[in-house]
Amino acid sequence: MIRKSTGLILAFDVEWDVKRSVTFLSSISDLVDAVKIGWYQLLNIGPQGIKELIRSVNKYFLADFKLGDVSHINEYVIKKAHELGINGVIMHAVTGGENLVTPVNIARELGVDVYLLISMSSGGELYDKSLDYNILLGMDLGVSGFVVPATKPSIIRQVRSVVGGKYQLLSPGVGAQGGKPGCAIASGADFEIVGRSIINSESPRETAINIVRAIKNPSDC
Image: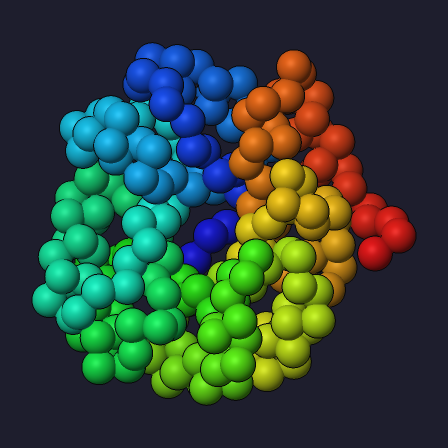
């Protein structure tokens, strides 16, 4: 599971080369607990580039490859992600229990955390209609936690009330998508995921510092 210090996870969706990426991440490394990477990196720098990035930055790396396929494909992606040095993966609950159970077990054997996405930061009405079912599905599977949107604080509170303190809740949608820094954690999340607000800032480190301050002392939530 992700070790919590600041409560901030960086959504690192950029089209930069490895060198620039390492330089940027190193400049704010002390302010983030994890780095979430996805298709931007995989398609831009390739698997070897991701491996080099992970080796160069001493952080927890969370892979958001929109993993929601049939079981054997999910298993393959998890194994390959582990080979790259990935610490955790996000899987979509919509895949269903039959396509999740074996991949989650394989991830556990490899020491890779699985975070189950059960609500989207925008749209995702089909997820929200199945929220109760998906929470229980994740608990039955023994995932490490759930991805719940910062833009829907009532859902964060609902999920936390069901799962208690055993599971980590990761909340995307802070900043550019409308979630206010600090409010997701105030509602019961463990981590807030922020991307563009930091990456596109003229002063990324200062912006990250301000977000961490807001996480520790939220207001007007």
